[in-house]
Image (cartoon, rainbow, N blue to C red; front, top):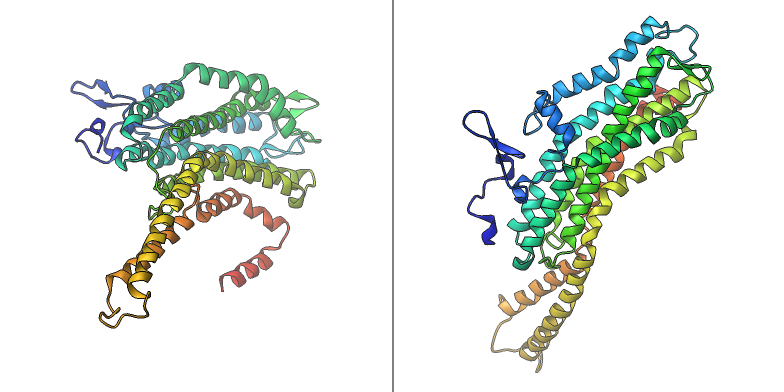
Length: 418
């Protein structure tokens, strides 16, 4: 094991992320280059603000409190202002507040999922950096660059400029362009009539929507930090082997990272579901009209989650080519020697082949070559792909009731299960 790891082999979750408490209530900051402190979540100005406001702890505690407070800021004022303006249940709005599925799903389902996803991703991704060293994948000469890659990722994660840019993008592009284009309906709504915002609409446009868009942009930024880190690690000379029994070159632990992003995928599916539901129930849309939109969202999730895992493909492919040459030579030599010993002059009678280690070794060599041939270039499994797709589609699935009667849908499900 490299000397840089030191003697502390405790699991990564037993180490504090930003620091560890000291006597007297202070915080002792740990080395951000230590792979056991790796996290794409625990950092940034907003995280520090939430921590000082007792909305989170050093390890993302108080999830329920964050969900309730942020939902209260984003959704409750809309309800109150819509009630005061007479737009909650009816009035002049063709789409009253309480019947606007999009706003309820966005702030009561998708936004909590984005917050819960932070804890899930933190717990699932935190041990990953440490595994590269614990498994000896990084050569001794590449360890300094590996630590620098971690340090660089943490600096980017903590960037004040990045979060300020996100705020700027939300208010200069996200709200006036993207949101207005996507939320435009040809009927009066609780938040806008005659091209003018209602009182609830002002809060919706300048507080609630920007808050949601910022959280979403922050997630994309974290995925950039994650992808950038994996790219830098993939540029190191790694000790991957095509003969590794995990059949992924020793990188199978990366395949498990996909499962961390299931709540994020569900949040995206929820946003799409709410938008489609509003169109169906208020402007005469159909679920079939949104099939391209659904496919684009699913493809987008697959790309942003899976593409970073492909960065290691060149090294695994090189290891497969090298292994094929080396084990091909070994196999050729072994087969020639085996045939000369056992088959050159017919089957030997002075020694029984039963129980011979020669035959067992030949079988083991064949098994090793099969492992080499079946090694995947990328640590991505069909199960992971299916899970991401299903997680994205689950929030959209209830909309099938607008196309298929509930009784008929239940019958079809029973046929699949039986």
